[in-house]
Image (cartoon, rainbow, N blue to C red; front, side):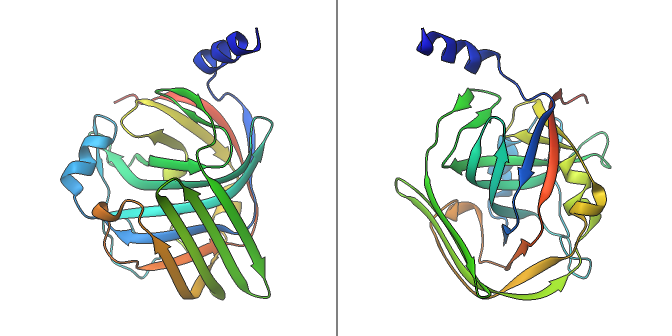
Length: 230
């Protein structure tokens, strides 16, 4: 009976008014994108890869981003690594979106193609005396981050706010809409210095690491389900 109920829940569930908290120390790594042509086959129909500026004073370029964070909701609590990029709608280029290309996590997660997925990784987070450590290990895949907290810098609205309103998983047209406080997401981030990263994840689709940074504050979201309308 429990298994049957679990299967029904997996088939029927979609986020709707789900409150989610992202804890402090959400970590980002930014890489230049390689193989843009192949990645373009992994994103929703009617969208294209967007050259992105995370910091106001840098040139815009296609990016592969790793986001490692701890999250809590009524449905799940744990740590996640999301491999993401940013796209824009072809016919409405002012509409931009995050697209999750891959997800490793030590908790449950929702995939619009396959429903609710069980944990597929183990993790370790620690921030102590100015040193930040974040590790995600899944079978033969690994991401190990170690760095020290540096200066605070501003981020662009496109990165922090605009791309977050409607997010997608790979090429599925079924997205997750998010409501949030813009001022909360637009707070300055803290650069990671003396950064040491050991990873083999998505190595064929990214160049050398450009930089890393963390959000030292919590962020709150309310998630719903929405389809991409072109």
